[in-house]
Amino acid sequence: MPSGFGNIHKIPELRKRLLFTLGMLAIFRVGIFVTVPGVDRSLMEQVMSGASGTFLGLFNMFSGGALKQMSIFALGIMPYISSSIITQLLTVVVPHLEQLKKEGESGNKKINQYTRYGTVVLCVIQGYFLATWFESQNQAYPGMVINPGLTFKIMTVLTMTAGTIFIMWLGEQITEKGVGNGISLIIFAGIVARMPDAFIRVYQQFRSGDIGVLNLAIIVAIAVGVIAVITFFERAYRKIPVQYAKRVVGRRMYGGTSSHLPLKVNMAGVIPAIFASSLLMFPAQIASFTQSTWLKNFLSPISNPIDWRYNLLYVTLIIFFAFFYTAITFNPKDVADNMKKQGGFVPGIRPGQRTAEYIDKVLTRLTWGGAIYVAAVCVLPNLLRARFNVPFYFGGTSLLIVVGVALDTVQQIEGHLITRHYDGISGPKGPRIRGRG
Image (cartoon, rainbow, N blue to C red; front, side, top):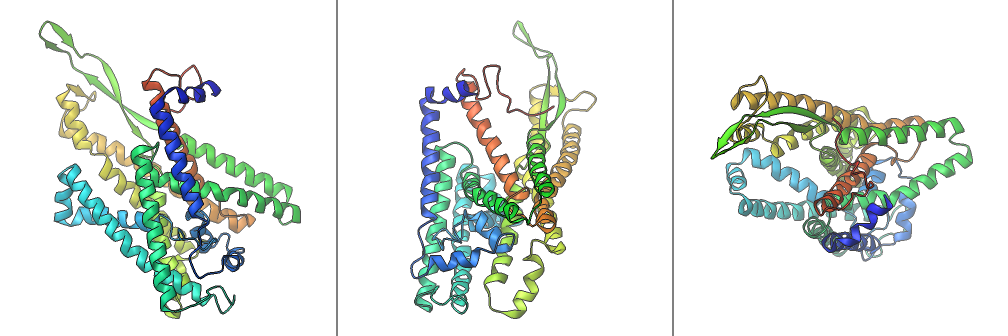
């Protein structure tokens, strides 16, 4: 492994991409500590001190601790993700957007432009509710907002909207010029930055006697087990055998070889968990920050991570987005047509439509398994917190995102090294970051 990491500096392009990615993430972390004008950050830290495991704690985790710091990045990247979800759903039902999607790169640019416009709208809505909630905390914590009023609301909405748009730009720059998916890496950086605080809290609970030795051992074992399960499923795939017929081109004979079509068990990766969390956080944010009693009562069941209705909706959304994202990223008919053009076929299955139906059948079964696995991992922290009263970071969505994004990023680095005839970061015997048959 040390020699594998040592090979990174031998590739100038990869080295520049890694440094660029680290630089953008460093800028994001610095921005976390830029406070919204007109607020007292120290008082907000008191409000958030007991919010671990609640919606505010979850919101603070996804924003990388920005809410606790009253930062201009307090809204995080979630408005952009919510806008992306809405745009992708509308692409299926709105003919104009569907036509744009078929136009290729130019159409995708137009759809991305609509996504950015939607991000601004969501930022204005969420920023207004957040500013209103800041002002409401003046009753319990006098002086949190120095000069409450319309001017403060407008300034807060503008600064937080600009902060989210800047994060969105950082993510796009990382995706284009760095290594890995920029949006996922920003969420990854925010979660990882909060994990030391979680370890400290668990240690303090252990020192105070709130968590016994046996319970602590169970927590550690479950956390390690969850990481192992995530790693196994993220690298697991199903091999569909493919046979290529022999064909004569000129005086040479081609084909006659056997191969396989790999289908990942979790084709959608961490996207379903991120999408589901983003959608659930929007009504939960409104319920937490609004002063309307009837609206709070209406949204409270889906605002409490312990409530069974919240978890049921969470699991439902994860399963839906697992199928939705797989459907828009993998087309069995196109795969079957390309296979037929190249003279390939699945043994025992007629090429063309029958092959597409077979691949779709296998993919549906795999997606069900992957969706159930993601849902089971994501609801685990709620059970842990209810049973052991531990911080929200162990297991669940946070570990799924951290491990999944880390594996994908390492795999991209492996790809850069291997294509340039260098050993991967796993050692001279070849990369170990690969799928399981």
